[in-house]
Length: 184
Image 1 (cartoon, rainbow, N blue to C red):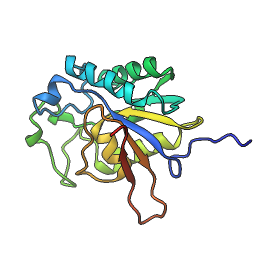
Image 2: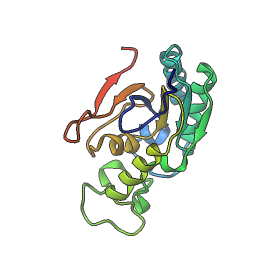
Image 3: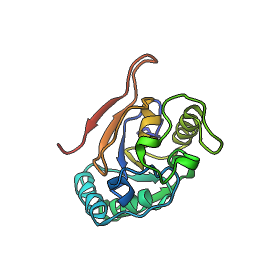
Image 4: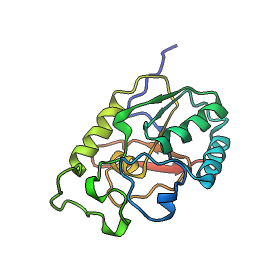
């Protein structure tokens, strides 16, 4: 029997955005600020774990930022899967916009002030990290809304907090990712 190895470009995987933080609730840009889950976010992580419990996830890869890593650890403990932190899965660096209201964040491909990671660089970092993953599927990635946007290549996409999704890579270069909610 052939051992399946994860390939980001062809293998479906599960994705969970971290649970809610106070900054999420207050509509603030977190970027790479290291913020904890609030009580609601912890409850969301436990609910996500219950949704994923029977799906056979073997490995969990997580952003090392506290909000994502805590979510991953709660899920991992519940489903019996190890968690590996990967710095390349961190949220986009928003420099001076971090901690500000989301409405004040820079948009699209406008010139970026110093300290703000470009959309191109962020997308390349995220995808390169996912291409480096080794392991037998199914896997779970726990990260951020920005990470989700970079994976599917859509700056306007929105992943809900701690709602498991199954992401299926495009079958051709010009196709879109298929995204299915899990446990609905």
